[in-house]
Image 1 (cartoon, rainbow, N blue to C red):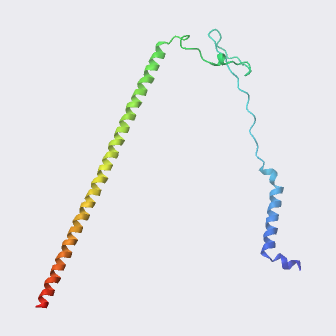
Image 2: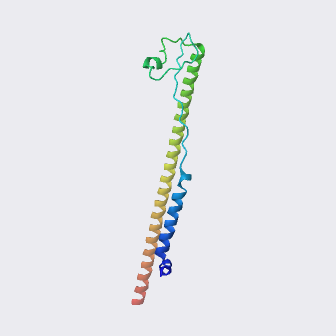
Image 3: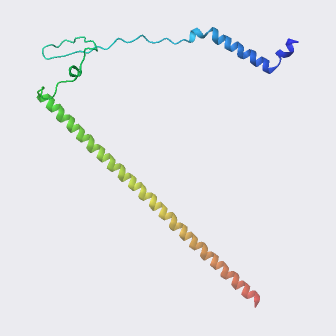
Length: 155
């Protein structure tokens, strides 16, 4: 009597799903992800003009004054700094010029493309007008011929 129910698709589906769930539950320990080890805490280094070695300072001790770099009035720019600043400034100006030229080129190309499309559209409209006039002329000639033929027949 039970074998009669085993042939039912519903029962077979339930048995299959139950078996799959049991297999997943048994092997679920294999699917647990492993986490990377915790990273070490950050250490700040305080560098002063008299001491050039890094010193580990707890994060609680740091104050905003200790983190901020010295102001420009405290530093004296060197010739290499000046050259580097001039080079950066020249690079920025060069990039700005290149960007400006690229934008102008793109604008010219867009304008040329628009002009080309406008010209093509005008040409299509002109051709459509010519075709319409030619069709009207052909229709008029055909009507004239029919009228002449009907006048000849009526005589």
